Structures are given as C-alpha cells and as structure tokens.
Image 1 (cartoon, rainbow, N blue to C red):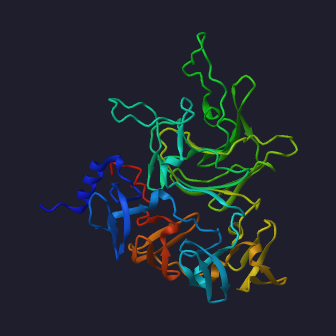
Image 2: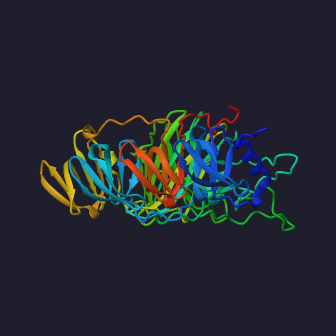
Image 3: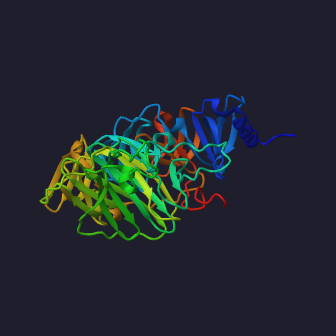
Amino acid sequence: MRMNPVIFLLLFAHLAGAEELRDDMMSFSNGDKLHGSYSGMEGQSVLWKRDDVGEVVKFKTSDLRRIVLRGGRPEKSLGGLSHIGTINGDRIPGVIRDMDDTRLLLDTEFGGTIEIPRNKVGLLAPTPLGGRIIYQGPFDEKEWKMIDTEHPEGIPAPDENAEEEDGISRWNFSGSAWYWKDKGTGTALVLKEEMPARSIIRFDIAWKNRLQMAIAFHADFKQPEPKLDEDGNEVKGGRAAGLPGLFGNSYVLHLYSNYLRLFRTSFDKDGNPRMEPVQMVSSGVGLGDTGTASVEMRCNRDSGEIMFFINGEFIAQWSELGEGGESYAGLGGGLGFAVQADDSPARLSEVIVAEWNGMPDSARSLQVDDADIVLLANGTDRFAGKIKGLHDGLLQLESRYGNFEFPIADVAEVRFAQSGLAKKDEETTESMKVRLHPLGRITGKPLSGDDKNLKILSGCAGEIDIKLDSAVMLEIEETESFLDDWDLEF
C-alpha cells in the first residue's frame, strides 16, 4: 500500500519527538503543523525536507496556510525602515532613488532595483516612525510570557501526564498570532522590557461577541511582598489582585467596543493595589461587537504624552506631566494584554514596538482625494499639493503657495491623492505574501525558488527575485473568517 506523503511525514514527526532540530514550520489549512526545512517552490507546490525522511516531498499550496522560517527569526535583518506602500496594501522596504509621473525606482536589499508604476504607489515612507524597530512578531511563542496574579514570573506549562487539567486559563499560539479562546479571564500575555522611554506600539486585534481588552504599557511588573501567616508561610490568595497584581506600576488602557479609559496602576505604601483613572476629553471608539482593528499607541515617559489611534485615525490623547503636576506612572518597559470579559474570544497579531520620534500624527490622518500630503520628519510641518517628482535626493512639490524641494531624508511620509491611484487588482488564490524583518510585506504569485531565493510575480511591481535571508514567513492563505483558529470544532 502506498502511504500518503502528508500522513507519512506527520507520522515521522510524531516519532522523531523533541530531539529533532526544527527550524521551519508549515501549517496546513486544516490546522495540522509540520516541522522541517523549507526547500523551495515549483509553481504552486512547496518543497519540504526532513532529515528523518530523506527525499524532498511536495505539498500543494492550496492545502497550506503559512510557512514560518527559522522560527520567525531572519538570517539577516534589513538595514533600514524606509519603504513604500502599494495600492494592494504591501509595504516594500527600500531606498527611493528616483520618481516621475509614470514610475518609481526603489533600491532594495533583498531584490536589487525594482521599478514600480507611479499610480500603484500610495505611500512613501523614507523615515517612518523616527526610530528603530525593537520588536516585531509574534513569530515565536517563547518570546512571550503568560502570567496571572498567582504566577507573576510565568504560568507553568501544562502537565501532559496529569489526569485532570490544572484549571489555569492560557493563551494559544498559532502561526503568527495569539488567540484567547478561554471562557474566563485573569491571564495576561506579556512582553517584558521591550519598550523604550519613547515608544510606538502597533498591533492588530480581532474579537468576537464583544471587545473588552486591557492593554498595559510601560509596566514594571513589580509586586509588594506577599502576605505571610504567623508561621512565615505565604497566605493563599495573599498576592496583589486585579490589574496592579498583573502589571505593577503601569498604565492600563481599557479598550471596549464603544469607548476607552486609561488608568494608572500602582501600590500604596502599605502594598495595597491602586487604580486611578486618567482624565481625557473624548472617549468614543465606535467598534462593533465583532470585528478587527489596527491599533497604535504612542507614549513618551519624558514628556508625559500618550496618544491613541485606531485604523490610522486619532482617537484620544493624555498628558501626564501637565498643570496638575502628575508624574508618569509607567516605570518599566513591559507590554501586556488581558481579556476582561467572559466568553470574549480575541486574536492578537502584527505586534510592533519601536522608538518614537515624537511625531504627533501621520500623513494618513490628513489623506484627501485631490492632493498629495507631505509630512516632514520634524513632526510638525506638512504641505499639500502635487508631487512632481524625486530626483537627486530632492522631493519636488508644487502647491498653491509656491514650489518646494525637500531633501528626502527630511521627509517622514508622503500620502498620494487617492484620485490619482490605480484601481486595486483582485488577489488570486495563487498569491502568497512574503513577510520581511523588521518591516515589509510583498504579495505575488510564486513562480520558482529554492531555500535561499523566491521569484514571485507582483501585481504592482512585476517579477521580483527575493532573497529569503530577511524573510520570516510565507503567508499562503489569509482569511478574515473566524472559523480558522477560533473554533477548532469547525
């Protein structure tokens, strides 16, 4: 009898156990996972190899969801954050060398010089964010910790040999996202010591039933000494409770479907937990009971500024070093997430932590149909008009107040008028997305490749030969359905 290659490999994956070196991971549309080595592409087939199998096996891309390379770690990170944004949502990293009314030239580390039609580029970002990216993921679950008030240093892994479950609620990691599918609450997902004093935090969140998420930032996770009985033993339940018990001295943003509130968490001199609301002018959000959103937070411990955006739109702002004389409560560098409502599944993905240059907004918030918007890197100066071109490092803008030339190094973002952009092409089922580190996404139909290189056909940039040393994931199937990793019984 001839055994199906998928079953054959999965059987050997089980027998090989934890001793085998597992660099790459492939996930199937049905939720199965297989570790091994990505070996290339042949048309619409992925080539996969394992030391315990010998020969290379082919898998149809129609059966796959994603391939995580090297555990989500690049062999070589890209050297800069400069990139362009195309009309299909891609972010292509590179240095913008030249541009006129018809085409743009982009020098890239991964694929040489790429020529792209001008009307398929909606964004130029020569100096985005203003600082280095410190974290991008999640690609490796080991980078994160799950904590609760009884396990502030990390919840222990479940005992597979135990006859009964331990009753601890846990987040689930799948592909490149964290999922909360537990019926209850109480467990936080945290990154410790990743945030600098001036930080930008970006992440995508999806939810069902209703959104009620606590987001902690600049947390130090410090706790008062646990209470002891007369014999010096720790009293059960004697540790600090609530959000201060999870995050210590921190700011915690409560994000709901229709509004948000910001709190300071800390402890008084007797070790009792405190939560103090921070006043703000507006608190409306306007999200549905089920949906998705891209969230951005900007916070500066030195100036006290805290800003909040949803889907690129400004929502709220706080000042913690203002006339009231308050000091900044977040004393650490930690970031954390905790669901605050029962039976409220959530998904967390596309997390970025970066340094913030103090820029108060983005050119996207000013984007209009009939004018190009230029936002300078100083965070205050912006101009509207018609971009005439980019030559010899100078961006040329024609406006109603005159003609300007800006050194490209002084430009943070350019958003082109929507009326001048081409219509977005529909993605085909043959397309995949290549995700680069620390920033970048390129969509296209795979043509050929080996374990080091991949040639794809992009609808915006034509054929591109991509060196995979900076790639961390090949995303083959992207679905907005909640019936993927949310409800395994389906």
